[in-house]
Image 1 (spheres, rainbow, N blue to C red):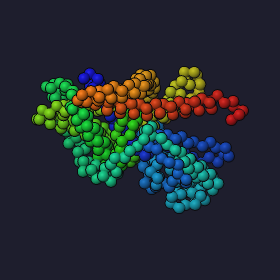
Image 2: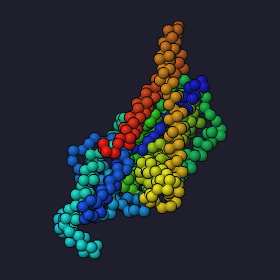
Image 3: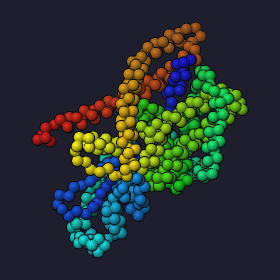
Image 4: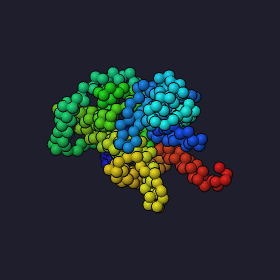
Length: 452
């Protein structure tokens, strides 16, 4: 019984927010010097895309201001291939003028008149060529989400239809009342009924119902997008690191304001809390034990999704609260920045206000420490699981050969062990990829300068 409880409580599914957005920064400042450096930083990637043969076309007319805490103003545009790119103001201006079908000579005349500095046609051509080269490099970059695979479950058209019907639940008054009611119901259940008693049947049925609350969770993200005019996309299943998860593609949320993106972030928790409260009421009315089990399993997934270190909803919440769009990749930059400062080296200033930098520093240290702790503790546990799986099969065959066959708990034990072993194998596959990438990076660093 203790083993089943441990499995059903700690081996939880979770929700991760996905999107087909790539936030890449493209700078297009006009610099007439022959050796002007190009700035291209592939910032943040959320879903795997194949290499495109030609640069994508961008709808510059539909570009919007990118709402972050960065001190540098920027814009965000979407390509016909679904890639999003962050543009500096100078790059945005050049692309806008070209989109108006102005020739480089006409752009040079207009910018010379407004900027007060003389610009030639060659300057404009070089600036546009630099932007096009960077956009082509972005388009040709194969991106990775960190997902081991992606299995779409509900197509975009179905998600959009349901999300539009549910969007009115995000009216502020409605949301406040339903949230307070859901919290009161769940708290009342805990105060009066406590923790559930786990049985084999209750665990299986409760787990299945808890999975249903995760789909409701994803529709919370989608409905929040619909509330603010952003189009939600597909909902699917994946494995992230070692966690089986549902994901919601909310690419278009990046065009929203930070406040609206925060609503998208918490929208999943809001909908899942309502679903848990409904199940709790169902248990009180009917007394059916699996509903009690489901309530606490769903609360487990709810808590796990708040983890801000992996790319669960808690991560996106921190990202939008701080206004740092590419938080995962910026962590390395921040760590390097402060490490260089400690060593007395000259460093470029970080592009965020002081209060944001103060919060980013401890988050960065804690996140790296958490990931190291996770690998240190999870690796031996999962390794023992993989190594011990053949013995689990032998034990089950022995149980099956007894008169009457295996008990229900033994069947459940094998099913859970098989699934966990499968996900553990996928985890080690990903760790192997990380090790190969690290070895290649180290080999490049150790390569003599003259041989490069």
